[in-house]
Length: 316
Image (tube, rainbow, N blue to C red):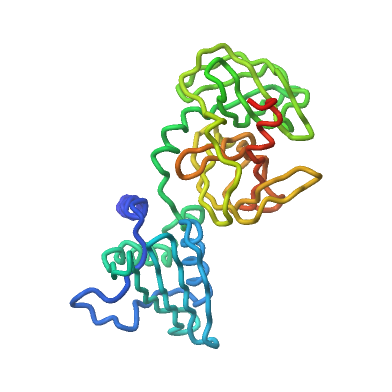
């Protein structure tokens, strides 16, 4: 129980955006960095993933096999993180952070505690790189819904979201073939009978109708079409457990065409049941719909862009 409480405290600290220390704090003789029982490559991988997931642009340089320098920037915040091997199974970590050109050493200890917990196997893999969910995204998460239906005797469930408070719900189309008894379940637990209004297998989009009014919706007209590579995004999903979760991710490749249709590629955890989830930017603006993931992976996802959604809805 103590380990569990301590780990929860660590998670809360990191949700506040803490990272790594610029230089040793007063009273600590650690000018060469703090040593962790992590091989150099693993330490580099963990820190790079963390920075990327937090929206930083990361550049890596090496000096032979002796050290790795990570340089990262995001707006007015910059990082220089130096990794050195202490043994085949241990590495030292030394970093400096500046904001608006001024050193900011106050963000070190939480990350050092995190790395300590990571090295002891106390941090689940999916939570190693974490990022706080912005309030605008949280406020719109109520528009996400769970969709259930029957395919033969099998109960299927996937995600969707309200696009019109009058009773329109958007989702993907590939899960709906032969499905009957459709129901939309709101975040409050209220179940609504649903009817299929439109299905487009080529675009992989569907529109369901339920009895309105509905309490929350995502305004497609206020969304965005153009995204930047490595831009943070957030998917509001109902995974196969039926629990609503918000998965952070980043755009990992430019918009590209697959079977003549544009798709975004994202580095994002996508579990079964997440197809049809809304994807928002950090300001809560709609940008895409989760289509699915690359088979054999959990973090290579494909997103249907907003433009395709508007085409499907006839410009709505």
